[in-house]
Image (cartoon, rainbow, N blue to C red; front, side):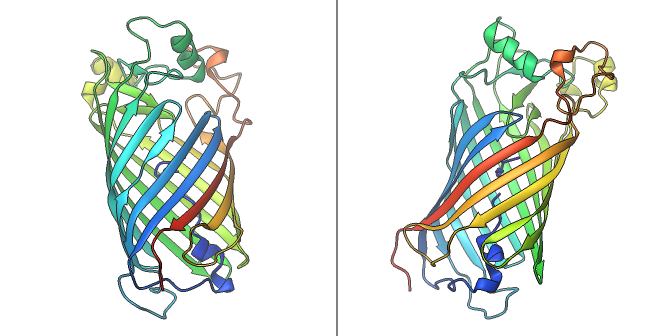
Length: 325
């Protein structure tokens, strides 16, 4: 999951190279740009996510728990073949162990590649087969539409390290608002890979437990969890709401690895980092299927075996555009 970042969230190179003693952070303001470009399979996706703005160290500290502190304000643009997004917000990291990001975002879907698709109920079928059929056989009720989505997010993160073991816990609290065709109360969004409620909330977490070599490599386990929250207005009626069993929530567990090739301190091209995630669905309405357990109303085309992994490969870097001391 990338939502944030994201959602798509890269392992912090300062943690990955803790024993390598990376250059200390400058005290002056920094005009920074960073980018994360990813290719994702199951579901399929290609996206680049940027971060551009001013960052300033809050105070000097020689203690490991507080030395990596800063405040940031700026923009978080994102671009993929189906949509363009622009977020404005900021981050504050008062200590190395805690970071808080808050932003507001607008996302324009182009109506291409089968997105944005809306549904009349949170109980609707949003399998890959259904999304592909609606894209190739559009009707007034199912045709993908260009639409503007508004999104507000609060993302607290805690990161801890003891010796060569690091743990990171990221929470993503998101509110979604969008306008689609009449009767559309839920839309499929591929990054969170579920039906987002119209004018409603989702909660997601990424939890990493990593072994850190101190030479740029961090590898271990990642658990990802997504849960949408629906109200009565997101269903066709009382019976439809009662029939909903929470199946639109999902979770994965698997391998997370990141390698930072070098950290030379603030410069025009620094911290080039390769990322790989390979995980399996513990729970998913359509991606943790078992052939002998097809729900009533579904077909075998709707369900993908849980043996098929979620795979994400990415590359990240950061740049400084102001001279720093």
